Image (tube, rainbow, N blue to C red; front, side, top):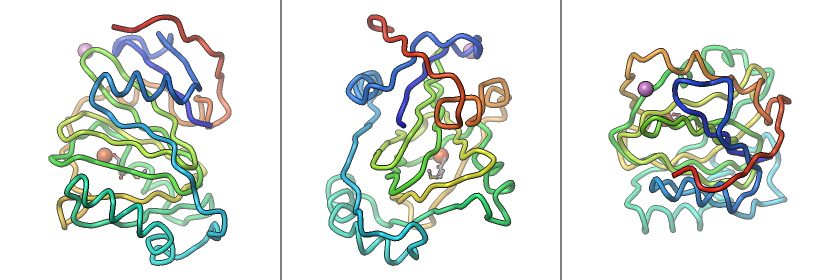
Length: 198
Ligand SMILES: CSCCC(=O)/C(O)=C/O
Ligand SMILES: [Fe+2]
Ligand code: NI
């Protein structure tokens, strides 16, 4: 299930906001120039479909994203809980980093959490099947797929080299709740959606 937890970046214990409301998530993120949308997924796609099959199934959507946003390439990242390299792959995205290009990810199946460090706040965005999310170039962020990853995501790149990260060296990611302590991973999910955070 999609969710948003917003924290002060010095207080990882007490979220300022927790919501599962897709429109509220989209609105909070849009205020920072971040795109969050829920798209229809293809029911006839097998969970273990090859990357070429996934790209073919979403060819129309990918072409539209390329045409509208200038992306050059798309690839597919998919992990199952049995993946032999799951720990190394989880670790690859777990430290705060930036990209010099806009990042757009579409979750074909499964779940993962993006953490965006925006000014003095951390936005933990739980993405689920059908969610499309952007991370604008230069935004400090990290991603947690959890200890037993299960997701397939389409990634779009303007850089034909694909995924290039510039790590910030900050230890902030280690202080925030991991995937397994958040709603996607079975953690607490009480709704608290008071007024604007601004
Ligand atoms: C959900 S796609 C895998 C993570 C990724 O590509 C990225 O850039 C994380 O920061
Ligand atoms: Fe990233
Ligand atoms: Ni700070």
